[in-house]
Length: 406
Image (tube, rainbow, N blue to C red; front, side, top):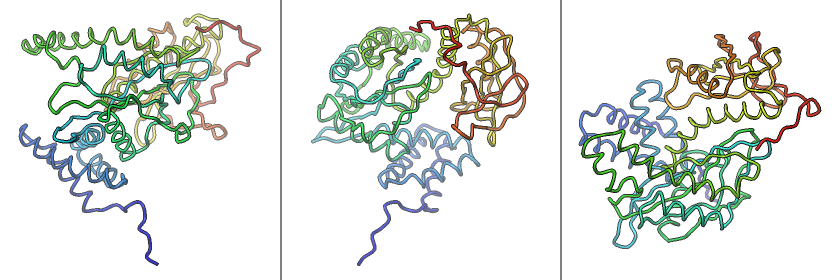
């Protein structure tokens, strides 16, 4: 009997080196026309890898570029993201530009934060708000009928591209929603503060705008005068009604939760925006939780901030104690995102956010802590004022003064 081929290919050094060469060429380009040359060839190679259903060659090329050429690494990352989330599709004699987009939501609650199926009513109301405030009038678009937690987003490049393709097809077919089977989704971790995503796709005739802020009107004068601040203000003004109306449309999904709907954007851009904004949002949520649960003012708390390393700086962990005690009540992780590293003034951001929350007493530890987790439950360990990493231990329910949270 003929032996069946394995479902995944092994890593190909030739393919990896070709991807590497194209990314380095793009990074070294000195003109827009040369950029287009390298971008087009790199996009073809990346899409070929995405169709194989195996990310190994892409990941191997990324590893090499990370070690040898940081600029080319950044170009390659953006090229992969572009190949995954957007493209051109032909239907009949017409060509369409297609984009997978995301609507991130920041949320927190003392109770369970919902994820999973979105009701038809909420989905219909959300479509109305997108049509009214975000998308151009003739855009075809679709929404997945699922509120995704970070754990439920596709894992890997080809799986994300596969979902994008399903969304593009549904958008071009004029379907109002793409059904997601809840049984195929991963379990959602339980956190005080977390992010949720609504995913969708947009299709427009090639070369036409997708979003309202791409059209003329108020943006034309901003572009003509080159006033970047005015152009940004134009976009913010367009999105202001979206923030209000989409919040009301989504409210039935979040009983007992505080939440904030962010602006829709391309999948990866929206993901990065949510990662950045989730950190101060989580800080505010934590302080609000401690204030309401312990029945104290933010001024009665102390924060201990410390850097945690693997091979390099990965994150800061922030512990909370009462001002007159050393036991750690609660902790949160402030992860580095994007191009942040040891040279980024992250501590200043953390201190500024703590002051916004009303916490004025802070201790900064300069030790290089290793990334340690509890061996029993897997939770991160947090620094106490003496520079030891410990398990955060919240008071027993009988010791708390109950206060209504929302």
